[in-house]
Length: 418
Image (cartoon, rainbow, N blue to C red; front, side, top):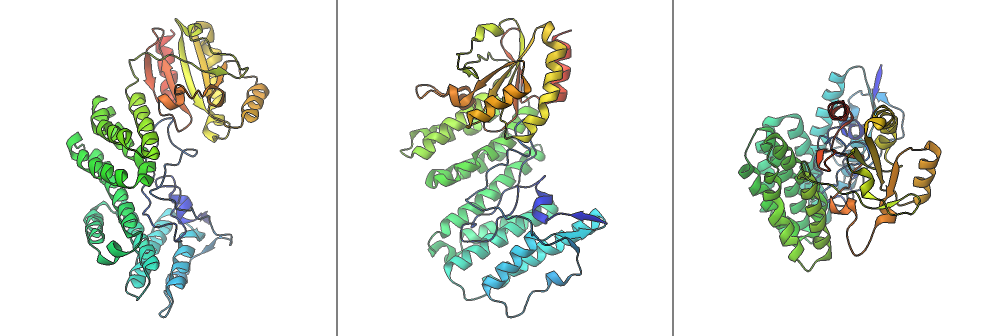
């Protein structure tokens, strides 16, 4: 008998880490976790949610086989009791013999929580309860659409309805709930356009609508990277980096002109992402401060093929990747291959201890030690927020491949250093 963990934790590979425990803080629908870009996603880099939702944790009770009783909704339950039931379903552990059994349970669970949300919405409830129920309903519609692409029109209809909902529109904070749901919907719409092989025009309208929401509510800037991803994917598939720049340049410009510091900072980050996306074929100069406190000499890389590795000790994939990088370093170093680590730790002792304990043979720079108020660091300039991020640079100093994964790196090194 195989035990599957909670719906939230099991689905995290394809969705955001989890749905939020339903509290007054979790009023926003959660967007999907995007398929990881090589070196820019995965376990250590969950993408931000559309709001300050607190992730729930799996229930502590031992996993057991479902008998269906957890889906029975009490007839006279109060809204609080119904929310509690929904949270329990979203966080419970069940035991399943097959994946088919698991999928059937999840389908029933989503339908039950959806029914719970509708039941609450039909009650005479206060504004806070109403907002939470709307958010819960939106989350369940999203999960239903994720499992059944044909249900997307239902999602679209829901978004249209809540944008005209008089109760939400008059409630304090109601517009934020609407915006959170709309952001998630627009995000999903962008992904679908890319998957369908659409054009840049197909997604520009969604990006423009998202931009309008961000400009009136800077809290949603945390979702910008999630919108950048599908456009970046389209640009890669069509081999046209200009697609990404065209889609977001006005976005960045508008935020830069704003009087809001959050938007100004987000503009800098977005420009960094755009620079990163256009790196291939362009020169890359490595600057920063080494673990010993000395300024790195970029001339030491002249005429060499080198890998710039943005990493952190607290990111599991970075640590897991080290033996493979070391093997490549040993194999190709004498042929002119170099690695430069760029560490993102804020706790310098952990960074220094790791480098010393592993006796890392290549130079390592520190983001913490390289930060200069007068000019952006390399991580800031290129919008590096997830680790590991690997950039391969050729002997001419131009980028061969950004976001390179280990398998591709092996092939490229074999070609570059025969």
